[in-house]
Image (tube, rainbow, N blue to C red; front, side):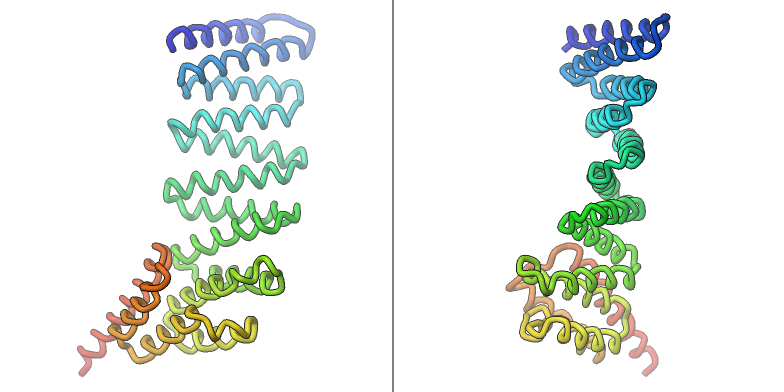
Length: 289
């Protein structure tokens, strides 16, 4: 390990010397880039991620001097992969630079891929607002390249975070739009009931029983098979218990569904908000009587 670090330092010094010296325009940057690349590899072998990342950024700068934006973007991605081991913030900064360059040279698919990765890094840090922005950008880029499956995956992430941040109308709009798009697609139509369930849960979070009832009618029009599903029954039962202000009925409906299909943490979190709202209203009514 120490041997690799020493080698890396040697290559880095030689590269810096090249940059400081005279040379035919371009040639010194070419030579330095080659040496920085070797230095970064040595630091990686030594698992010295911080040094490897910083050298990859120097390599990116050499490529920018040579107007090789694609190579510079790739070097920023390499830097991000090193920084990921030690600092999400530094990894995000490097990836942002890569995205910017990929957009400049029209590599939209690559830009989309790394926007998605930026979304994942911010999700990991529980920075949901930022994660949502990156997934939204990734979805738009994938859509423009007609990579529909990836676009929809990113859109669902946006909806997931929007609901967590209590931006329910935004989440509902996304889930319903994907459901409409999927209903006539042989491969995607089986996922429609799950999308409508998510949209329905977000409707419940708005604490408006009439809106939930109207939504269920719309969902049946969109997918005539929906009314025969357990997802529909759950939403209808929850809406009824909400209308009646009956916490026990609400809990029983959830337990019945959960015994067959486990509710994931996202659904559980949102449904707990609805349950607490019913409880609060029940207590308020008790105080008034």
